[in-house]
Length: 485
Image (tube, rainbow, N blue to C red; front, top):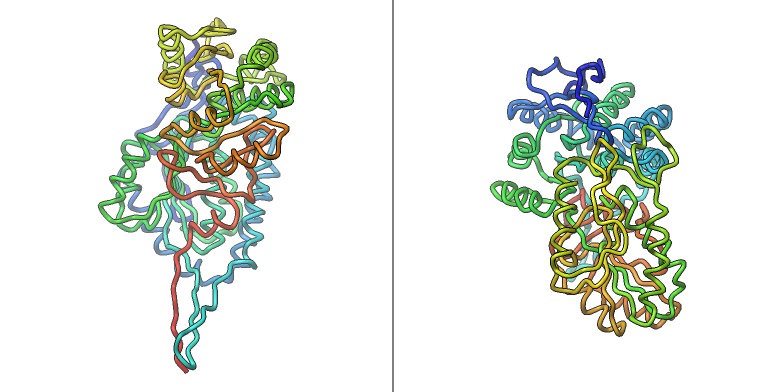
């Protein structure tokens, strides 16, 4: 595993605060390519004082930014998305190296990011309040929507570039300013994004970027008394810590956390379609997606036929180092801790009595954090593999005797983000839509949300949501005005 200094990117990355890049910091975080373990670059690590300066810069800039007409704020967003498109190939290449994402998915992420910024900019002329009926003569009641103020955005590593847009675009178009902390696993793309912002005329302090580890920098940002909303995407454990830190100042939180998405395959389903969609929903980003299919409930009469189809797809999945081969379907896990977690869960599942249909082992590729795409059958509801998030290319399957049983088992979870069902019966699809207790249900298609939808979870999958009108309004608060004439 090469870790030599010759692999370091000579560019020096720096915090972006109040419209300028700061001097290099003494403390840095090394960033590695998870496909081969090589060192890519070192990025700055902020102190509590850096966090404070970034937040205060955002606070100073916010009143003037809010005072701009929304359509003017939207013009700034479109200027940023145009810069993203200018460097779309370079940005995708960076995601391939930094996160281990396959080339095609990396390009989708970059292009979707630009589209998402433009989509949110379109809401500038659609931000609405309400006029309410009054019980009093000659009185008019207005309900206005106003920005919260300063937003702190804490990003994950699995879709690091898109999550910048998911937090920045709705925050800015509604009149907030923002301080973003990228994941220490994948921060370089965020610093390149800051370079793009610096090439526009976005007013200083509206967007600020600070690097570092969650335990220190994330904690300082979450606990800062001048932050009005913390929006975080990541693990349940970290989400709980963020809520605790935010509680000290009663800071609002928006949390997208883990998932254990069930997929239900009924006997009347198109099994080829179901197998293709579930395969796509499991190996995408090497299974490191909160809304990917994490467990399958298949009716017993078609269990073997379905597993046979799925096995063929899993065994045909080409994986490896996406920097060396652009035709792969799957790259590595993000780090050794992720690989070790997946491997340990599979070993415990074997001890619990599952059958390994295919895979079930760390891939022998010589370097990097690769796991063989894996199918496990004979899983039962009490097993860890069916209850805890795997976050890797491993799919446990349980046979069931009815839709009612499948829905009951699907709902028996601490998570509640996404779900799916495969059936030719509209009645079955509607029953599942009524009874599945999840924020999203996909019918006869892979798990991948639309920017105009509302991506929100229940239970330990989070608080609040993102995307569409409802996601936009997460960044606003109401102000009711009573006018007596």
